[in-house]
Image 1: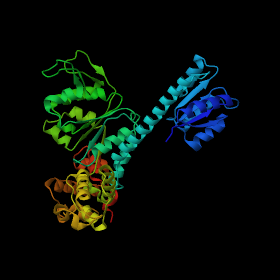
Image 2 (image 1 turned 120 degrees about the horizontal axis):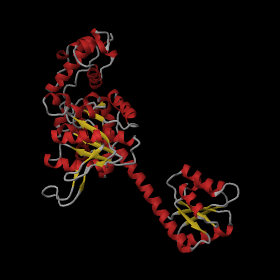
Image 3 (image 1 turned 30 degrees about the vertical axis):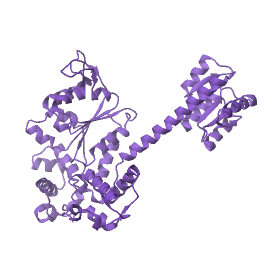
Image 4 (image 1 turned 135 degrees about the horizontal axis):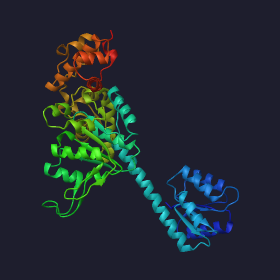
Length: 466
């Protein structure tokens, strides 16, 4: 398809000259004799490039330019003028013009500038498509109450630069939450740098995070920029932050306090402006008690804690997640579209999903590839998925809350501890009329910790109402 160029100029001779030059070079050209007519044609014909005269009766070119930028900021506009001055060119560039050409118009100059504008338009579209594809890849799918609380926290935290600590099991979607915070923040146009602190060997993590100078240690053949520097003006996501050594924790604490980093082997520090989002599947308060995690770093990270619920606490989202993964995987891997029967979805909803959303996605991918038919039914599920495990107890009334042992069995010691702690908290809240301060005093815990537990377990006041 030929690139489309719209020429807006009140002089018929200029319009005809540009049409001849551009059509001879295989462009599709449309002309308009005034600013209002040109704006109408932009909306109707969606050109790739606009060539716009500055001096026109009525609505002048700079006014048209500002309106075009408001309509579509990615549309390249080439401003042309028979009264070209430095001031005019500067004003046009400041208003968002792609380039500025003086009359009389030289054929070669016109073709070069238009070709460059078409390339920029194509790159802009490609970048926009890539951005949309990335957003779809990291979309958070579901309507469960636990996820809605997370999304509400994201909405509140994203516009700020406050440090966020994401808590939750492995595979629950903490990275998606981190990316959502970045995407909705003022830093969205800057880099999102992810670091898996558990995957980097201890002897390399400081170099990865803070960088190093050439010759600072054996094997340092050249200077390396650290992740904090790479994330300058953007966001750094420290995944599995609980796995950092005490030495590395101290340096990360300094970055948070001073907003500066020091490369290994360097004699000076470097200022950075970085928003930090950390995540862990560990209980950092217990790690502090064991002397494995610095308490001062925990307080720096724990400015806005967000608990990401495990998949077993949002089973109602499983059908939508399965559909989402199936659609994406079929597109990405060129697979024939398949659907899951209601019976198969019901079986999938009963699984415990120890690996959470990551495990569910892998299961969907396996079924899409290995199932011969167009509909995936319970008989198509592998044995480990067809054997349904007992779902976690749904606590609704005072009796059920107070007696977790009488509810459906849980699968692991950690699940039993969580269920018992939840039941204990709800019972104590009921006994104290759901007064948070009084309950915290009775059970001898800080009120802030009790609030965190309420968020973690999704406890609501209406649970014990008969």
